[in-house]
Length: 279
Image (cartoon, rainbow, N blue to C red; front, side, top):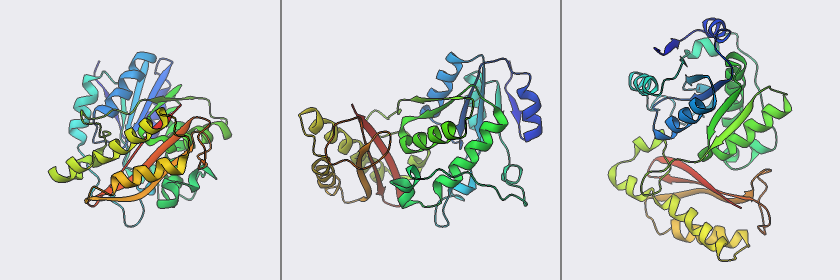
């Protein structure tokens, strides 16, 4: 069956009525890699119909961020999705999602004020708004997200619960390169030297896992050891390192519950994020 490519919201809604339940949905910003495709495969296994969106959402980028340079290759994306037997690809224009009269926003408090939210104040307002719109348009049974964006998943789950949205959020493991670097579209920004240096994020997470496995429960001490390791890499600049409660994202002093170890690190001019859960 040939994949259907839809650009208009009204057309997507009409087509949605003909899709056989259950419907799995994978929202993406395109420039697909194995991380995205792993989500598509899980959605394909668990649902009769699969919809993927490709939309570089302008409202989640800050004024000094990389909206205009964000990598795009729609032709390649569509070829990859056709091989995964996706039923529908929804590719709206920004003017379709945000017409000139647009003035409504969806915001989640508390969870969005830490970590990525502290570094990128308007980011989650854009994420929750576009995801709420996509859920409203697609009406999925289940939606699929990768663990690499752990805070985003927590925020979206909170939104879905608070607004009584009738769908299930499914989290799939982070897909990594052979050396451990989490797959990300932004990895394409890295030159060979930076790409090699970027492995320090995963090395720091592995150090946290090792310390915890050896009995270390003091969260600030684990953070400091991660900082010490990363600072040995001259191309790396730390934005934040966190050991927080995996559900509330409150910073921990002592690890006694599932803990999200997350970090944002600049490698050259490229900002990368990653995380693991200690449990």
